[in-house]
Amino acid sequence: MAPLFTPRADARLRLALVVAALLAVLALALGYAWARSGSTWAIGKPTEQPIPFSHAVHAGQLGLDCGFCHSNAARGASAGMPSGELCLGCHQRVWNVTAQFAPVQAAVDTGMATQWASVHRLPDHVRFHHAAHLAAGMTCATCHGAVETMPRTVRAETLSMGWCLDCHRDPRSRGLTPVGLGAQPYVHAGVEVPPLTRCTVCHK
Image (cartoon, rainbow, N blue to C red; front, top):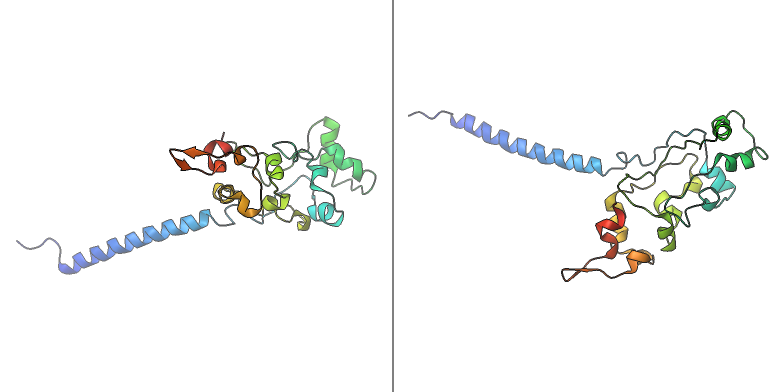
């Protein structure tokens, strides 16, 4: 009985299968690289804000401390955002740009908070506490970058799970002193597990 496919057709089929497998591997590699690239996480891309706020002016030229506007960072989970009254308290006396501050003034007049667009928002299932990280010795720049040089605030780090775990696995190697859960030894099934890598530390 004659073969169904010629040797040439069989060779072409084998070649096509090898090429398809290589293309699949290449596609997975490219997808992985894209998922971990800065552009995917919007690294360096400014977020549209209600007013053109500049950290370069406030934190850089004027030397304002981060805690002046983000007053809750040293004691709470959220760093907090500046109120409209805080902004206008300075700008109505020192540098009043009426057109630019209209959204802030409108928010104050209606008793609403100014709707700032978050640059570093984490997913809802993530638990993060600013005060715990500051108490461990971290600086704002560790996660937020050199904001004092940013005319428009941009994301400096991915803040991805892998990025956080790199520090959580061995915080002391970065000169940090873990507090609370991070200071407690943790052994599971006879294996010592870095305490800050437990799922419940960061996930609700």
